[in-house]
Length: 166
Image 1 (tube, rainbow, N blue to C red):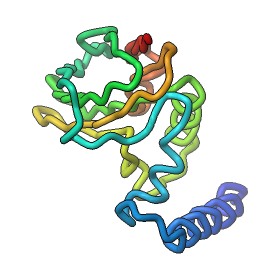
Image 2 (cartoon, rainbow, N blue to C red):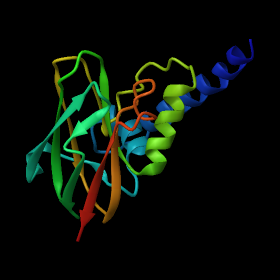
Image 3 (cartoon, helix red, strand yellow):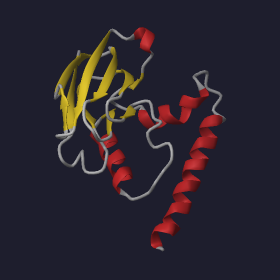
Image 4 (cartoon, helix red, strand yellow):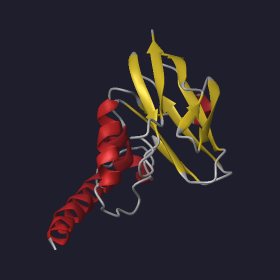
């Protein structure tokens, strides 16, 4: 019963954030306003595929690994991560810093079933045999992470390193 009491404030907060983002008057696609605020951070911002300098192919495997386990990117570069699920179970691919990874992991393990959790521009969910894309513009140098947040996957080590230089 305690869980039910916590759902109402969370849902209210989500609704209020959505309402605020819809009234922002931004020139960007209205569908992206809330997602951009949540997803953008020190690790960059959603990118435009037309501005991508390259495509990085990533394979998600059922042994809780990504191939490649790390990638090197230049500051200012926009890349398309083309993520293929080579396994037989669902996987996700989230680009972010440690804080973004921790936040999403907490959301996924909290037991809350929040619709639209994977509608952010820095994450894609890929079903077995499918391919999805994340287009990201890296605005800052540093070491960032891509991770899978299906239940137990991130804790099992399903993550990779993004090294941004320049």
